Length: 338
Image 1 (cartoon, helix red, strand yellow):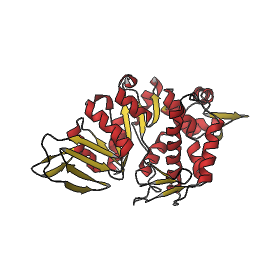
Image 2 (image 1 turned 90 degrees about the vertical axis):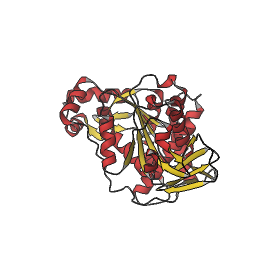
Image 3 (image 1 turned 90 degrees about the horizontal axis):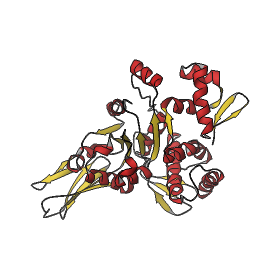
Image 4 (image 1 turned 180 degrees about the vertical axis):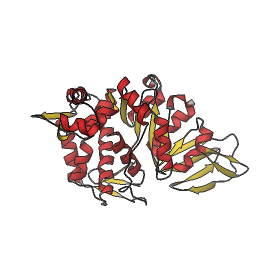
């Protein structure tokens, strides 16, 4: 499921606009993911591999100037974020960013822009085009408009104590990953590998994906049927709905279409409960996510063979997934809940 989510975020960065017919509105298409991960997870290794495949831009700057850029003598000098157009942007250890940079991430995920104040006044408007966006410098500010989806990572336990990061967390599809000793040893033996099939990732941006009213109604009906997040937290459900629309659009584009249908919604709904437990802060291991992905009517023995574990080990993960209502069991076979 982790790799499927990462691929979805990459595809979403190639979608310019999602049009919601029901409410006559435009939905921001970019899917953002927030990963709380254990120390030693190999996040930077994953980020570098995606960057080497030209699917992502791994940003290592921790200041606003380094991320956005600057203006000197009437000329715009680009920052690291300028390389993110129509790609995934990866930020690691967001808790270590300076405060202004944290606020910048909220602007980026909400508006698709990143703005900084300049020390000097810009006498006349300056523009500079970059792939997937442009720079505008005027009246003492430099703004980068950039079309990108993001993955944010942190190993900190204090994210909810930081107002800016807490707000960022609420705007993302969140995963709270754990890793036990057995998984850590396996990671050190095999290394961190990310397998993203690039065949269905469009090479060129997609101008618009349409969400028909009847398909949106189906999505909303399914969301009403079950919930894990308290019903009093309505704000969560509005943002979850938008994320499910984005995932539906991703599946639509992957099958080379521009109008979301019932199959696309079904793809998105497999993430619904996972989205909720992520928001609630429930922890899952990467192995549990892999098992969740292949729970499509398989037995414990078949799942064990698929993930390379003993049957007795697999039962531990299956019981966790059952208790979280992420999978169901009929006879001796396990299936994702949709």
